[in-house]
Image (spheres, one colour):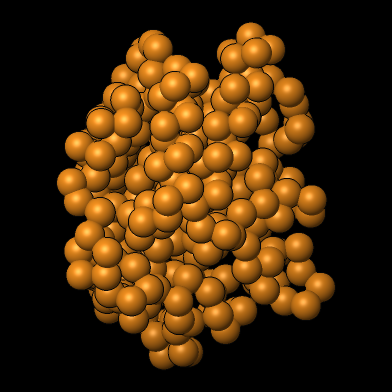
Length: 274
C-alpha cells in the first residue's frame, strides 16, 4: 500500500496525532511533545515510502525502521495501529500493567517494531547493523533510523555515523527530528549540537534539509535519498515540538507530561477540526 495523495497523507497524520494524545492521556504519562513533532515523518515512511506489509510483519524482504528516540513510542504505536499492525483500541492501554504498549518500543511483543529502543544514542548502531546485513545479503532492504536533536549529543551517535560512512551504507537513511527542544530546554543552551548539517557532512553523509511537517518535501527527500550511492543519507527535518496542539507547541514542559481532562478535550477538538 503506497499512498501518494498529499491530502490523504495529511489526514492520516492527523489521525496518528489523535492517537498520540489518547495514549498519553489514557496512560497518564508519556512524551507527547516529541511524538507530535515526528508524526509527519512517520506518516510518510509507513504510508508512502517503506516496503512493508502488516500481514507479513516479519517478512525478510521488508524495510526496517528504528525509533532511536524510543520515548516517542506513542507516535510509533499510533502509526502502526493506523497501518493495521494491531487494533487501534489497544492504544488506550498505553503503559498499562498488562499492555504490550510499554513506554518504549519492545520488538518481542509488538508487531511491526524492528528494534527495542529507549536508551538514547543506541538506535543508530542497531540500524547500522541492519543496513550492513542487508548489503551482505544483497537483498535490497532499506533501513530508516529516527533520532532526536537532543539525542545526538550522545557520543555513540557519532561513532555510528563514522561507521556508517566507512562502510558506505547507502541503504541507510537517518532522520533527525530537529524540534530544538529536549527535556531540560533549548538544545542550544543545554548542549549545542549546531550546525547539525555540517557535522553530518563532515562524517561523510549526504545531507538533505527539509520542513519536517511538509509532506511533499519529506517524500521528495526520501526519494532523493534512495538515489544516493556510496554513502548514507541524513534528512534533517525542522519540526515543532507538540505540533498540532496549540498549547503544546514549542513548550518544553510538554516533553514528558500527560494532559488533564480539560487539556485532553481541547487537544482532541483542535486536532479533529484541523
